[in-house]
Image (tube, rainbow, N blue to C red; front, top):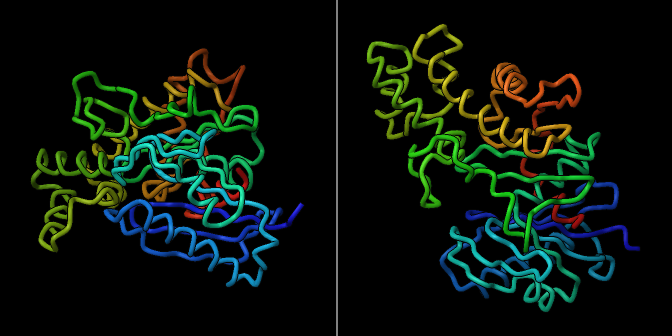
Amino acid sequence: MSAYKIGIDIGGTNVKAGVVGNDGKILAKTSIETGVGRPHTEIIRGVAEAARKTARDAGIAWEQISGVGAGMPGIINSAAGEVVYSCNFAWKNVPLGAELSKLLQKSVKVENDANAAGYGEYLFGAAHKYKNSVFFTLGTGVGAGIVLDGGIFSGFKSAGAELGHMVIVVGGEPCNCGRRGCFEAYASATGLVRICSETAVKYPGSLLAALVAERRAAGKDAGGKTAFTAAAAGDKAGTEAVNAYIEYLSEGIANIVNAFRPEAVIIGGGVSAQGETLLAPLRVKCYEKAYGGVEYAPFDILLAELGNDAGLLGAAFL
């Protein structure tokens, strides 16, 4: 078996490709602009060129590459290598795996990007000690990857595991999926920004309100980090915003824990940069809400370790 494979993380802004050894070490990485809006054939051609370039940069002959894995957002029929639907790309029924395989003359596996990232964390990151884990990435939306008994769980025809779109507040905030009250509408970085903004309006004389006004004067949104900054300074409004966010986040996580009972919940994405300031109170709330308590079936809540490389590594080992 060849010692090298290529992992590709196809995002709405950039495509990242890397040559990976069997030990999980990344030998070289390439990043190109995705160019969303172009015909899918052009985007896929660019992805193929990035894959070949990263092999050249690593000094690895193409014949030494055993296969290619790609992760991208959307509903992915992983068995067929088909992008059934990706709203960010406006793709429907695109045979990504077959077209990449034809261009690269290699076997290609395709998976949802959050699933790939969760698999990467399971193989080489924070979840490597656990057979069962759930990975959440808290960014513009809420992505999730479920690993059960060492394998990716994605439901019937790979259309499931959309954990960001379970409702936690009936009739709540609108979500991009068309429903209201989704976990994503509250627990994403976007949701945190909204909570921050609304709390600043509620407390116009607070430090939080002053920090939000400062950001807006600079042409920026309220900023999710703003709430944590204000809370760290002892500001009542900042503390209220952080507590509200963690309450929503814990509701969603507790629901998933009660459904799958993983050994570990891994938190990644931009909001995870708050580290233990986020995780310490989150653990308390999640443990309180776990069905039957945590004595019999405890679970850890940990920070992701691989950052932007998680999806690339997970994809490589599909």
